[in-house]
Image 1: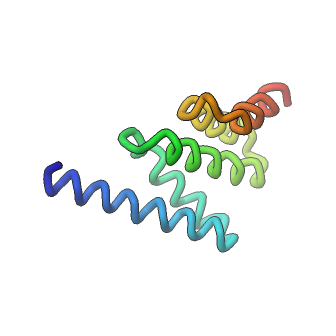
Image 2 (image 1 turned 90 degrees about the horizontal axis):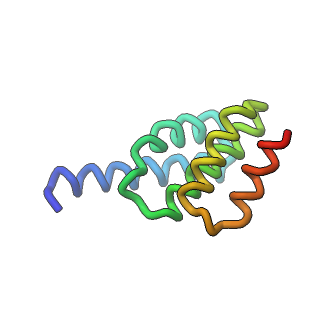
Length: 97
C-alpha cells in the first residue's frame, strides 16, 4: 500500500469514527454530515462497515422524515450485506410505506 493510500485509509477511518461518535452522542446533524461525507468513499471498506454506515444514515434520515433518502441508504446497506436480515427488513418496510 502506498503512503498516499495508507493516509487516505487512515483519514477515512478517522472520519468514520467521528461520525459514529457524533451519532452515539445524539448529535444528529453532525452525524448526518459525517455519514454523508464518508458514504461515497466506502468502496474499499468491508461489507460490514459499508452496511453499518448506510444503515445508520438511513435511520437518521427516518428520524428526519426524509424517507426517500432513508430508502436509498437502507438499499445501499442491504446491497453491501445481503445476508443481513435486519437490513433487508428495514428496506422492505420503506418500500411498502
